[in-house]
Image (cartoon, rainbow, N blue to C red; front, side, top):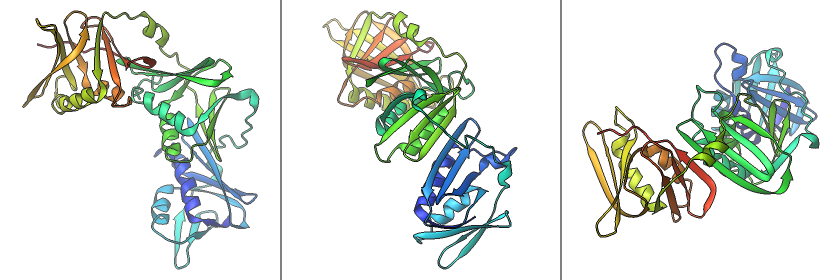
Length: 381
């Protein structure tokens, strides 16, 4: 391989595919970026076998086609420090990669390309496999709104985002058994029904790659046990999780409530941030806070939030709008904050309750397309 390329374009392509790469001591080839030069393009691949990312870029000059597998970290660090618009890359004897600038030459050991897994060498996406499309920034915003509660890496069945379609509706769901996030999105075109569980790591990679780039359409395809996200020259392919996902529809529909708090989001956010200072270092029950809803003799309602750690404690009191009987409940304030920070600060929040040991429902007032179900903690004296 011997080519001349735009330095920044090469660096951008490497950074895209390396989002799927993990350090692999057992099989070091999987810690590499694979690049193949063909027909005046460089085709890049990064994979951890569960998630594969492929992209391409134009070559300014091809002297000799070929392929190479290299560790990206030191090359990335070097290329971002130089100022040349173009660099020359050449592989000699199959085991050394040379990168030449106007005034320097660097050498890098490379891996045997025959050892690199043949992952999706020829991708043929057709309309029979097409599921839906969405502007990239809109999809990223949706993913960010649900990804935070898919935080169970040891539980594969729930370490994912569940995506389901029904006519012109898409549902995005995540849960870790202690909380559930549900987001409903109406779309213009009718979608063939499908249901998939996409690994949380893949969703994180998509967010990192697409966020901040041009807002162009991402097209989603499903073929056998894989989902494909197609964005410009980049394709992200993920192995789907085929384990059973919790029946979230029953969870959303079968819980009843008879108490309701209405509160400004900015007011509540600021309050929780203060409470977290004390509850985050509670060694016995991290992030646990006690919420008391009380009706006074004058008809006013108050919210009293308390939290403590080994050396300090806090009691916050606030006049509120609360419907229903008095209630005392313990909640994970960090979990609560992670949801409400995705709602505009000027909006009104609604929290619905039943008992001290039953789930809490949280959503933006007059908008139940984005719902959070949070399980309480054990009350402590």
